[in-house]
Each structure stands twice: as structure tokens, then as C-alpha cells.
Amino acid sequence: MSKPVFFHLSALDQAMMRVYIRYCLCFPCENESPARDGVAARLRTAVRNVVAKMPILAGSVSSADTPADSSSEQAGRLEIRLSLDELNAFQPIVKILGQEEFPYTYESLAAGRVSPARIMSHALTPLQDWPGGQKSNPAFAVQGSFIEGGFLVAIYVHHSVADIQGIAEVIKHMSNANGASPSQLTQHDLESAASQQSKLREQLAGIRSVRQDPRLRSQFPSEQVQSKAIGPEKDAENGTQRILAFRLDKITSLKERVNERGTASADGATAISAFSCLAAILWTGITRARFPHGGGEDSAAILLVPFSIRKKLEPPLDDSYYGNACRVAFIPSQIPKLRLPYEESLIKEVAEAIGESFRDMNDGQVRSFIDRVNAVPDVRVFSSPSLGLKSAKLVVSSWEGVPTGKEASLGLGLGAPQYSRMISREHTSYYCVVHPRKREENFWEVNVQLPVHDMRNLLVDDGFMQFVKWVSE
Image (cartoon, rainbow, N blue to C red; front, side, top):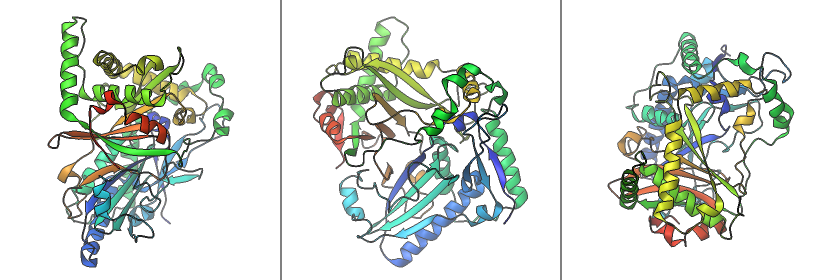
């Protein structure tokens, strides 16, 4: 066994939710063995290329803990361990699934617009959604699954290693493989890659010696974190997922109208983005669906929106930096206000609050958060937020930066993927994932996960549904 190397993670990496970012690309594909053999070979080549360019992905996310009462170290920290043998042996999983393992054909999936509920499957996924309690977990996994008439590729990246920009970089490198296998890396190559990646992440590492803060030690006692179940609240029986395709022209028109109002008000309003309008529509509509009878006069609600801070830093990070470089905007409101019948004035107010949260973030705030991460006795307090199914919190994540079309071909020789979806094994929490816009088809897909009764309420809300073009099965 070759000597392992260690990739050091940044403070933002340490503070991320310890979950896999999960993305599935769906391609029509012939059933004949020669065609399948060629696709499988090209997938292996593409994966070999991406780990040659991003070796950290072939490693294991491992605990770097020392005793919690140590005066010099912090509990709950992670690092990436990788040996040359592991790097050179890294391969995707390739399966041929019969109907007893996966009941849908590609044609039937496509007829239902590849509903995420239908691809929620252990058979299609290489790993569990949330890393378990093992001492180490894979940083990256790829599974290609042949079903009748199609090929589904599930890509998993540990969130402690990368954010959604990391998934984007993986897809770009796989799609640019051009069928050429990379040469095997040497021990020197691996050590250089570990050193370079660790230095890049030092930009967001901060100084761990600032940890000596007794106020934070009392606020976040390590034993509370260690006794806490690290992971999501699950509701496999009552949860459901749908793709809601929003009318892009209606969202654009709404954005233009609320911006006209903002300019006319002479209050110095800054332009509201289409994404902020969409997030406001989702938040108000889902709040009405979840709390049809109100939540009390003082019932607080929070919208959480992860967003990139690469351009907020001084100096800015390059877009190709695939370590975690995102923060979460927390937008507070009240349930009674959000659940009012649909009004453009409410959408404008909520969208403005969302936009302000993005604009207000700056380098100083990011550095302050990094110091806070380094100052707690157990870093896992940041990686395990309360986002349960009964929480009055909603997460809306934008995956708009992920490649589409031929740029997402993965080098398989199958052309552009017909669909891209978030993929899972089970229902957890409330969330919305906003996919890249499909301008030619005039819609904007959003993966919405809710309990069944809340989804039912949402889909009969006329104020909300006026923006929706279609809903997946």
C-alpha cells in the first residue's frame, strides 16, 4: 500500500452540512450490448480523467479529531486521505438493472418528465444521501445505470469537499475527456496536488488559534454535539417530490414590474433578480401550503438560500475554485404575513429582502464567520442545522451554474442529457432546488420536496399555480 497524503480543508468546508450533493443526468441509450459496452468504457475514461485533474475526489473524508478538551485542537474536524493506489484504482460503478431492480423504462420515466420521486432508489445511487457514522466516507462516487432504453448517471460529491460549483467542475472535466485516458499519476504528482489544493483552501481557513473563546465554548458544548443525531429528519412514508416548471416569461415579466415599482418609489431600490422573485413565490406559496390555518401571530419563518461568495472576497476567488465558497442567506419573516393571498406587493417586498441579503454579504462578514467556525469547541455545530420536516424553515438552492446541453455530455457519445435531476434515496426536510433555465422551452424547473398533504395544498393554490406551466407526475 502506497503512503497516504492528506488534503486539508478550509473553515467553510468544515462548516458545511455533511451530506452528499447528488446530481443525476439522464440519457436515452440503445439496449444492445455493443452500444452499452462503449458507453460504459467512455464513462470509466471520463471518471479517470476527472480524478486525474481533481485527485481530492478519489480520497476518503475522514475524522481529524483530537480530544474535545484539548487546548489546541477542535473536535469534529475533517480531512481527506488518499493513497496513490486508491487514486489509480478509482472507478465508477456500472450496473445493468432489470425490472425487478428498477421498475421503470426510460420511456416511462420520460413520459413523467423524470419525476424525482420515481428515481428515488437504492438501485440507482452509489451511496446513502447522508454519510453515516463511519470513520471515513468516500469524497466522490459515480454510478452509471443502464435501464431499458436509457442510461442514468448519478454523481455524488461530499459537501465537505465541494459546493455546487464543484459538481459543475466535475461535469465540465468529464464532458471534456474526449475519450483519451489520462496517464497514471505518480506519488510526486499526488503530493503536489495535495499541497496545492491545501494551499488554495487556506484562503478560507482562517486562524484556528482564535478558538480560545469561553463564551462560544459554553454556548456550543461539545457533548451536546456528540450526543446529537447527525443527519436529517426522515419521512419516507409521507414525503413527495415533484418538478414544477415555472413559466419563464411570467417570472421575467413579474421581475420587470416589481423593478419598475422600485425605481418609481425613489427609495434607492436596487434591481431585483428573477431568482429572487422565484424564491419569493416559492416561499410564500409553500408557507400557505404548510400553514393553511396560520401559525400564530408571532410565528417566525426563515428562508435559507445558499449562494456563492467567490466575488465577495478580497481578492475574489476564481470561478474554478471548487472548494466550498458559499454562505447561507437567512431571510426572516412571519408566517401570518407570508401566508397572505398572493399579491405582487408582497412578492416585491420578499424578493427585495432576499436580494439585500445577497448584496450585504462582504469579505469582512465572511472572515468573521470563518473566525466563528474556528472558535467553537466542536465544528459540527455548524454542519448539523435543524431543518426537520416540522421546522418553519425552507431552503431554496440555486443550481443554475451547472452545465447543460452538450457541455454536460460526460463524454459518453450520447449527446446532451435529456434531463438533469437531483437524486436521492429517501425524503428529508423541506427544500427547493432551482435548475438551470430552459429559455428555448420557456420554463424554469424547480425540484420541490414536501410532505404529501402540503404538496396537495400547494398545487391547488391559484395565486401560486398561475406561474407554473406543468408539474411532473
